[in-house]
Image (cartoon, rainbow, N blue to C red):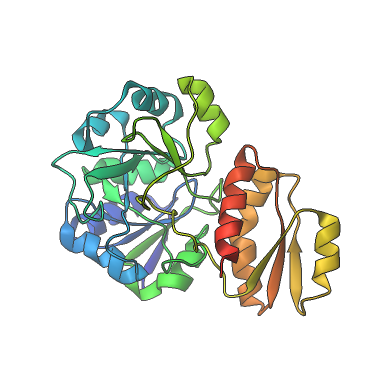
Length: 306
């Protein structure tokens, strides 16, 4: 059974670093969701991530670094626009897909020559990565394809004995994964909507970010993902939710559609709670398509995919 330590414990960072440097796995708090972290330069440790999650080895991981000065250590031929975004948005819920350097293992990238990189906006996470001295690979700390974890308890419930240490830093403040922008294409593409609204990113770089084309090449691009055990039914309004509710026994409505930050922050917890209570369905009112609503709609759509 994994150990859980509060981020307020003065030994938390040191214990996490010791686990990482010995090739172990750490449940790492971030502002988006909890990650399952391993030192990215230790292939044996990275392999444990795939084993613990039941994740296909061809599905690439995200590298987490602690300072923008490390970017050129792990990526090459970085476009000016990508650097501009990094300078404005890091630390924060933004991941950049770039051409990888020779320092990045192909196990991390799923055999690809591209690597996804971000700096988390969680002080504890950055301290751990900084003191570790190397980037960590950290997908969400849950069973592959299931609901992402936004508390230390979620990590423990999903992966318990497969994680050496879980650092408990409370609830994740954003609650959905990072936005992923591909800068290895002729024009930047949105691979995954997330905690950083695309409209804001476009205003920073002064150009349109296109919808993705080509194969799945980053976390969260599969059609089915983030799914609870119960059925997820999508509706466009509270009125429609009320009418649909009667069709499902033991169901509940998710209705924070008018408050996207609250919706995002509570989404995965509500999905897990529905499963814990044995509900047959959750009726999710889709938020507006703009801003954070785009990420919420993406997660709900993938969670409802059969």
